[in-house]
Length: 337
Image 1: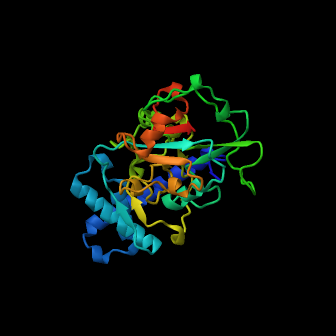
Image 2: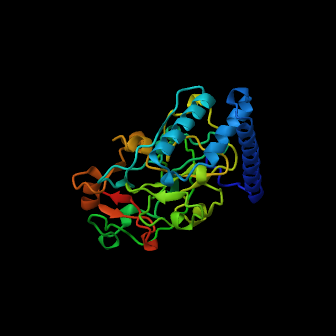
Image 3: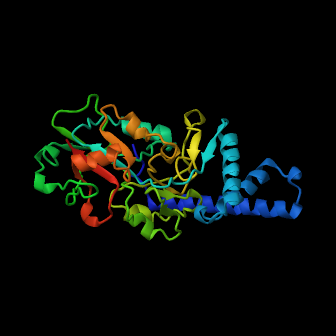
């Protein structure tokens, strides 16, 4: 269950203030180390503070030189490895040329099992604390409230990148945990980050910490997130989550294969979201949710490749995009056989 339900403004202020206090202590430790000039005489706390200072005050990832990126990656790998007592890698593979990632989902096949949700949590190191953070919502609705079987040809345009329908209001339960799915009379509609071509979240970010990568994935530089949550407010799909407290990620459950802009461990006071599993997809693999879908409802691939599976879906199936009237141009498509 996501912890977005019962968040209070004072909790956020406390979280941000704690982070600032920690940052202040880190700064004092770093300055003291510079004055002393002898690392070997520093306590473990001072060494950690110096590392933390470097992390918080590094340049924005996009503005780093290659050498600065390598230094930051090495520092993070060392920090996470020591913290979780297992070898952790932090990839910084850039977007590949000629690739624009997209996902399509057959809403007639989804049975509401939510294995995509759990696969995503396991792969992407979401907090396991009470009110587990989940990037994917599978909304349970009564049949007839939004039924793909009742859609008419005039409601859906077909053809590459054209499939859209007017705004769909999704109202339903997404914390359900039924003993058996699909339940009689129920319909299931998964929603996650749409990886918009024109993302509202990017426009409102005052720190420019969230941006769209050349392969179409909207990412977050966690070290630069100031926790204002304007991106969460701006997102029409409720696709972002916020770490109100220190994420609870047991060492034994950590996925040690991470990406700087993706599933590396987050900290308190930052936003996070789906990144199309950059640590996997930039290595030529499917996302965790695609692999975890037991009924094969999800399709993923390169929208620029006319021979890709997702392009064939878009060109041959009845396709629509969620809230298309907002002109966000999602790269997450829904389709019907």
